[in-house]
Image 1 (cartoon, helix red, strand yellow):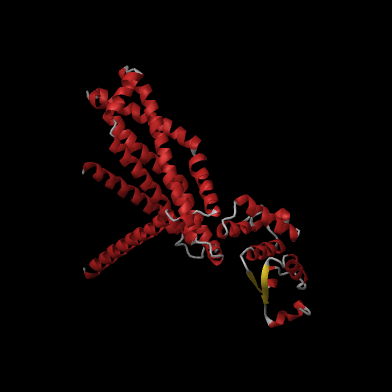
Image 2 (cartoon, each protein chain N blue to C red):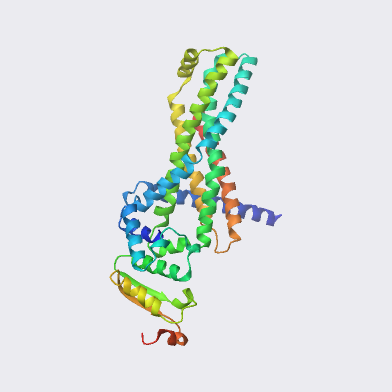
Length: 261
Length: 110
């Protein structure tokens, strides 16, 4: 019985220590973002490449998924609103649920699956190949050169792609509001403007930035935990991805609490 | 182009300028063609010169070569290395080569 409590206690302490370490590490990276010295020519080049890989290369797939998934979702939601006689809540559902909740979540899931996994593996491979050690030998700060560009890219990409996803959803909403409710564009726009809450949009954008920060920071952190053996790569990648999904859930719950308060 | 990174990072040199400089230095050792190749695509001589130039890109560089014949195992003597070092001798302050005593004969009179 005692060993059960000991094990449980050890696990809890390990979890809390890992959480505290991640927060301290996040603080370190966050401070570097605002340091002018960080933005060397080499770092700016990495940042541009990262933005291209994450935000531009993904565009065709992202737009296709947004259009298909968004249209399907909006169609279902509008149909349900009509069936339950909740047409009056149409604007609030569209802005409050679909634009400020679902599009950031859809975006962060897509970027996590595509880019966070890639970043995690890239860092682990660099560690195994001793490339990180070589950078350190040449006094190239790993945080400035590798971490900060990826984290900034995460923030920029999630904010921009989530906004794009919202626009796609609102455009498909125009079509479905006309098909299901027989609503003209003018009426649709008017309802949307009346339902728009500026603070909700700010919270959504802030949430996207937090998502972007952590879905790049956590994979980097776990990737750098790889040892010098190839077998450590799949271990750190799977640990990193599990932790990223846990972080997404925590951020989602925290944003919901912020809205309720 | 990893050679260019040192200048880009430490001296905030624009990417194009740093890459031009790296290509220019590679051409000095007759290896301009390897500028855009990755490490696994290089032969031992090319890899050695890449590492040498990368070390020389640091300001007031002091180069230390540890067991060069381990990097280029098929070399019969030190001539290739001394020739490469001579071609870039304005880029570093000093160079030291360390190796085991039993490799002495490969170094000749050096």
